[in-house]
Image (cartoon, rainbow, N blue to C red; front, side, top):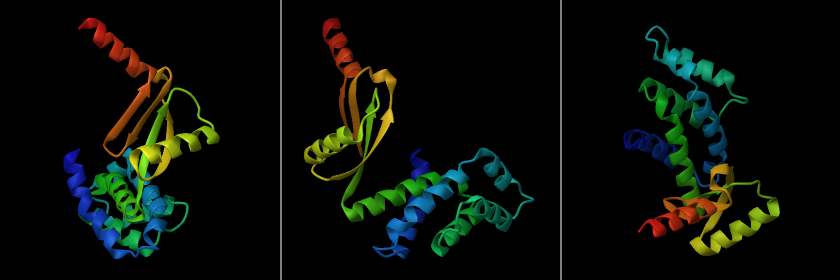
Length: 177
């Protein structure tokens, strides 16, 4: 995985440097759409076929998208295809998102919960996490029934685990010692 991150970094940074502060956030969604299409196994198989040209793959990808992406993303797609790095598109999108977020002073937070969280609850959790981590957070929720109850929060490389499962694990470890 580190190798994929190393491959993707120059592409994400080049795209980021080629855009200004107002344009950069508008490329996130189309870039994620490109990454989603590029992750399709049959498309990757088609792209790896030596009889298929870069233009054919590019045309296919652009034809599947709901709207034509900006010229900067079309150029990125062409360069990625020419270098045989279609498999890195997901990581390119993730690293580009991180660069845009860093410029805006925002961090991505993933809240894992055993149950659905209402908008009001999410707003309370986000406010508490913003105070705890000292930064603005863009929060998304993932349902994970294995947690039993509580939440597990991941912000960058920091993890805050307040789940029932984690507490039970701590109790098991303490009793076994």
